Image (cartoon, rainbow, N blue to C red; front, side, top):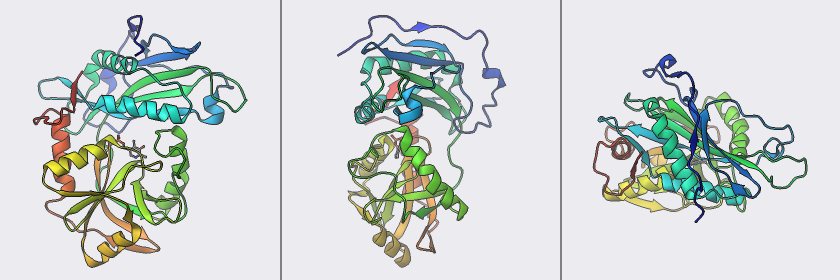
Length: 354
Ligand SMILES: *Cc1c(COP(=O)(O)O)cnc(C)c1O
């Protein structure tokens, strides 16, 4: 395996912005820490990463990111426990997925040591930025963009891997109402839906805007073929509880292999909850909502962890989900966040000390 030949260099910022930040009232992902990590790919190799003050980057107008959207990203969080120790959650999974996305977008893969050492070195420097307020965390955005130039539609010959961090409060407040999509698709068989490719999200904005205009918060994506299967909730994986069985769709070309999704499946099994990984049809969800067997639906992803759905719209009809006093959503969210914040035993070995 490729390893770093030189140590990561650190250029510290002269002043810190940390005292300007209201840690009690953080929004999501809109204030950035003092430093960022930058690693260039040139001459066929990833160079030694550098940590520098958070700042704008300079790119030529002919950089391929602007024309062909060659970019991928990851989303992860650092958590602080009561003793002040900092933790990551399954960071090697993020690295693996970054490289799966890289392969699909013809971006050179990033060696594991560059990712993990880069990330931990940056976080050690930014440790004070990890919020201690309950539910808050340091959102981490590793990404790769094509900085190489040329109007020719082909992969770039230069890239930048960057990690920037944003102290963040919780992502969603309250339950969301969602619209089951009948026309647009976020992904297709053979496409890039399984990759965290920037363009996937650009393509979601317009259908989501239309749903918001109709009074919903988010779109439930269905398969591109017949809009027959429930696949994802916005940029989250989706779970439905019918009677007492927790169901989520299988990962595929179209469904992103979420780390929260697979962790929830393992925790649910550990809790003795019946789980099924299979296609969920729109029809069965509508039918279950009508006959009262659809007890819960929720989205799952790093940002919101679990985002409960209050109800959904489909073909002009609105369906409400019941208010449960003991929901799987609440139970599973507690289990997973207790592991993330080092409040409970980590029998799965998911925590990673920074
Ligand atoms: C990132 C993402 C998810 C959730 O993945 P996590 O690893 O749990 O954060 C789900 N669906 C889409 C489309 C995503 O981009």
